Image (cartoon, rainbow, N blue to C red; front, side, top):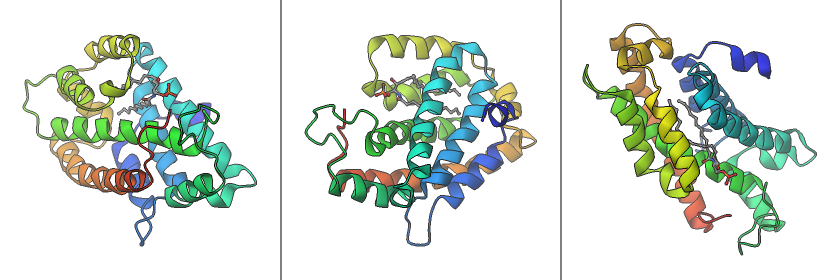
Length: 215
Ligand code: 1PZ
């Protein structure tokens, strides 16, 4: 794993992962969802040590899900839909907020799902940004609109400090590793609606089963 995390980030690759995570019936394959996040971790790792605590958390959450996938219950964790059904049917989720299952698949995926909303907002800002717009501001605004509401003060502060160290827009486009700024904008134009769809499907599923407040 360490090796793949050190590899260079490529936006196209992340897009492919999120694309292949949707089944024809609009189920979400956890394996590809996780590999999308693993791809994003490569980007985080290339941004310097201030992002280390974020990358660590993302890796640990993807690892929890991969462990379920590799376990004897693996087949139940093939899709987000089957995972939710399996964990609810077998009472493996803290629906009554008891905190007995702090590593349930449902609560773990919920954290990534919330982060996906941030990603969607951030990439859309990046896509429509002008030359002089600041990545740190786009990142902060997207964060305040989404994830920040779920984070305590200390994490919000640390995240805020890390955002200041983000590369400027054009340098950030280069990190994306898909070519010219026009090509980046083009790929972002495909990525954002896709992330939006994956987000929306999970959002509705979690709403239906009342899983939005899992501790
Ligand atoms: C390009 C710049 C990247 C900025 C990333 C913006 C997201 C800031 C997220 C700050 C997360 C701080 C680390 C740990 C947080 C955890 O406490 C929470 C809740 O989990 P719990 O404690 O309940 O187990 N974790 C999360 O909210 C999940 C965060 C995943 C972040 C993945 C970011 C991937 C970035 C991709 C870069 C393009």
